[in-house]
Each structure stands twice: as C-alpha cells, then as structure tokens.
Amino acid sequence: MRVAPFRSLLAALALGALAALPAARPAQAQVPPDVLSVGQIAEPLSLDPHRVTAVNDFRILVNLYDGLVRYRDGTLEVEPALAESWEISEDGTVYTFTLREGVTFHDGTPFDAEAVKFNFDRMLDEEHPYHDTGPFPLAFFFSAIEETEAVDERTVRFHLNEPYAPLLSNLAYPTGLIVSPAAVMEQGENFGRNPVGTGAFRFSVWEPNRQVALERNEDYWDGAPPLRGVVFRPITDNNARVNEMLSGGIDLMVEVPPQMVSSFAEDPAFIVHEQAGPHLWFLILNMAEPPFDSQAMRQAVNYAIDKQALVDQVLQGTATVAAGPTPPAFAWAYNEELEPYPYDPERARALIEEAGYGDGVEVTFLVTEGGSGMLDPVAMGTAIQADLAEVGIDASIETYEWNTYLGIVNPGLEGEGDMAEMAWMTNDPDTLPFLTLRTGAFPEEGGFNSGYYSNPEVDALLEEARRTTDQDERARLYREMQEIVHEDAPWAFIANWQQNAVTTDAVGNFALQPSFLLMLHDVTKSEG
Image: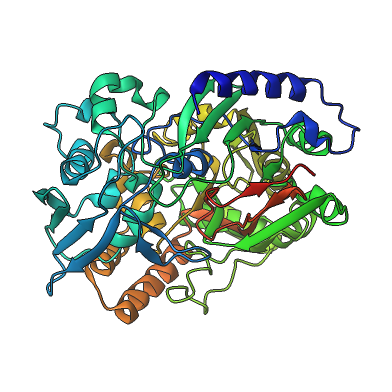
C-alpha cells in the first residue's frame, strides 16, 4: 500500500465525519470497513516516545513502535518483543538481550544492537549528538543504566550501577519503545512529527487538531494487522466525542463520560469495555508556599472532600475511593491496612483553625478541561470547590487545555497555583512515587514532584525498594512508604478509576489492557 491512496481515503473519512448528525444512529459507511477511527481526549504532544508522558500519546505510540519487551495480553507481566530472550546476571547488574532477527524500521533501516544503543544513549548521555532533541522526562526509568553495550549485531547488554528491580517493567513501558536512529538523525527535533518505528502500523499523516493517521505495516515481524489503517481523532469535548460515537464518526471511544456508560451498555449497537488497572486521581498540594506548607491544612483538604459522593455522583460508580499513593491494582505491594480519609468537615475545620486559617483562606485551584485518566475533571473540580468552600477554603478555579495544563503543572506549582488535579496510570509500584514524591524528583531536577514534597524517610524507602530484587521485601518497603505519605498528605487522594471504552458492534478482537494502552494489532472491523 502506498501513502497517497491512504491519504485520499483519510480525506474522505474526515469529510464524512464532518457531515455526521448528533442524533443519528451509527452509520458505518462513514468510516471505511478496514479503517478504525478512534476518538481520543486530546491532541498528542509528540509522537517521539522518549519525549512524552501522557497515556493519551502512548495509546498511539504503542501501535507505531515496539520495545525490547512488552506486556503480555491482559497483564502487566513482561514477555519478549524485539528481544527474543534475555539473561540477568546473578548480582542483578547486567542484563543481556538477544534481539529478534530480520526486523527493519519503517524506513527500511535495520533494527540491531547499535540501534538499541543509540536509543538509550540518546536519552541518558548528555554528550550524545542527538541528546538535544529532548527533553526526555521519563529517562528516570533507565537511570540505573551505566552503559549500553552493542556486543554484536543481535546482542545488547545493559550494565547497571546497582540492581534495579523495575527495569524489565520499565522497558515494556512506552518510554522504552525503540525509534529509528536514521530518522532521528534526519529529522532532529522534528522527529516527533515524523515518527519511524518497527510497529504494526506506520505513520501516514498528522493534521494538527484533526487527526493522526497510521497505515498497516505489511512487513510487521509479528504478522500484518487486519486493519488497513487507524485514525486517531482528538475530540476534547465529552459531548462532541459522544455525538461522534453515536453518529458513526468514530468506531472506538476511550474514557467514556461516566454518565454515558449505562446508556451505551444498554444499546446493542455498542459494546462497553471495562478493565481495572493501576490508576490514581489526586490533587497535588503546593507545599512550597502557604497555606499547604502546613500538614494540618493538607490533611484538612483530605477530610473536607466527600470522595464517596464524587465516585457515586460525578463518576457514576466507575471508580473507588483512593486511600493513598499506591493503586490497589498492585495487590502485592498495596497496603490494605490504609483507610481513605473519611469525609469529616468538622475535623477539617478544626485542622484549619489549628493551622491559623480559621477566618478562611483563598487558594488557586488548577483544573484541566480533559486529559488522560482525568475523570471528568471540570465536574470533579467544581464539586471539590464546593466541598472546600463549606470548610472555609475559597478555591478559585483556573481551567486549561490539557497540553497547556501540563506545561504549567509539570514544571512545578510554586508561583502558579496552590492545588492541581492530576492522574497517573503506571506500570510498577515504583513509578509514581519515585517520579513524583522523592526530593530528587523536584521539577528542577527533571522529575514530576510538582508540589515539592520532601521526606528523607520516604526517599530512603523508595531508593531501597528499587534496589531490592526480593518481591516480599519490596512490598514491605512500599507499604511503609504508603503509611508515611498518607499521614504527610502531600496530595488529596481521590479515586482509583476502572478504565472504560466503547466500540461499535462492528469492532472485533478489542480488549482494554491493565497498562491503559490501546493495543490494536489484532483488532478487526466488519462492514456491519
């Protein structure tokens, strides 16, 4: 298949979508039977896997690229991908991967050990000639790698500076996806707009704020996908996304508005998909400035918010109340003894009085219009604002588009706001706390600790846990960390979401993954 005919097909698809009527029933003729149209919640920031952090972007990237390993279908367990096998040294500091033979990037260049070395050196070596095509915000995942060695064409070896338990899981995460060195050298900083990987689909076109289109990779090492192509459409407004689903403009919608889940489930023309996963929705509290430099004030926020009402009324039962920083989906590491902060306005008022704000306090509350796993953020923000007002916290909401929002929150809340909504979907119990709760993860250090939480005991527990290869001991360390963070309350712990999506009944072989990624290699679409 050539790009030009596929782009002509995409133009026809776009025109069909524009003609869709909100009240219409699904009209599959609008979308060709061999092309899947996906309604996403936001415009991607980049298609360079090493430069992005949002699941919204990752859902596209995992169909363009492969990693050395990947998550086994329906699990967070790791299986071979571009690497056929691997060995780990007895002391846990050397990982040797045997690479799959005969794989090429979409630009025809070979995938080999030198390509793998290029990818990791690019992220980790500040002297690498293409390091300045960053930033690489999740390079933290691979900070234990001291050297990447291309032993021979099909063998690559990672030398670590210490044992690092999450390495394989992090290699399966989208930050570990392998890009074409030749394409990076040709495109430089523009690579994110002209991506080249080895995945089941190859890049066709990106029309900003309209669509990202991929076409089938006929030579895919794991077998060519049934679909001719996939179109990802950014539709930020919930109502617009629902209308596109109802009118046949899209075949698959991620993150269904909670109030619409039951309606789609009752309609035989649609299939609702649900899957539990490691998700946490929380409020970052700015500890660098008053009033949330006070532990009493941070605890007061946790007591002031009626989280069960949010889950029942705003989220329509699609989530559970969160107790702490680790999602219960990580059953082996989750501290089941932790209880969520109860809804207790009187206790909140007493703590506010204790902190010296008995006469009331004004705060700035940053809210996004929509973003990965953000759970109806405007409605949630408004409900939280009302709860806080009841205890004397006057929260002034400032609302931003998702990518703009990340550009404000990720560099740190100091001088920007007092509290901010955030959601993370993670792959390992190390990921979220290591990137967001360590002193060494302050934004100026390249991390995502946007609220400037610092506790040396938590730092030590997290460092020890990632060096510990015994899972029972890791679990003990993580559970102790959760107790401390729960008490320190650097965040308001709100909800753990059960992800959902809806497809038309013409879509087959689709399943949500615990990783929150969209794996479309095996998906089919009938003519209906």
